[in-house]
Image (cartoon, rainbow, N blue to C red; front, top):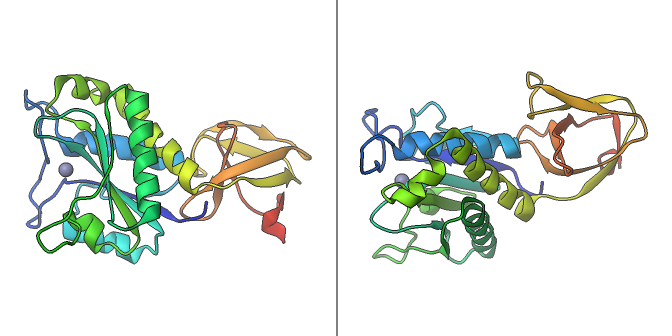
Length: 248
Ligand SMILES: [Zn+2]
């Protein structure tokens, strides 16, 4: 992975610590924050990356602070849109080619996997010519703000209403960032090692890599300890049981 990535969940708490749902569906049953939280978790699991505001306890100022404390190379805040539109759009820091590239890939991946309109990468500036969204303007790393779908559009909401829909959306974000920031690092397995479902010791065992197996890692987890297999089988712990670029 060429950059350490952080995902962040939009809304959940205001500056006074009171619950802020963000936008709500027309029937008031679905909250932007709750859906964004599920989507972000699936995306973070896919990338093995840090997730800010999972406890719904961080207002925007605190979310920005957490991102800036983490030494990240890229950050994305996850939202659902409202206001009478349809489809996926992703805002990026104006003038950042990497931000634009990431925003375009995420927007394309989410919209095509969910089957909604691709509104594409966007820039939004305030009256002073600075980025409108605080998360984009005030975070140190290259940042984007993902508006997955419109929560107040019935057809859009249908796509992410269920757990399966949130997973599809989160994985689409993960795949896009894997494409933009992932690399293809080849290793040879030196000692038999387990394949895990997630980038953690506690996750399920999915299989075993045998001595002599050739593997390709695309993504490294935020803690630097795990690598995601390109073939999609899961995660392996990085270390001396693998030979390759890491040994040089
Ligand atoms: Zn929002």
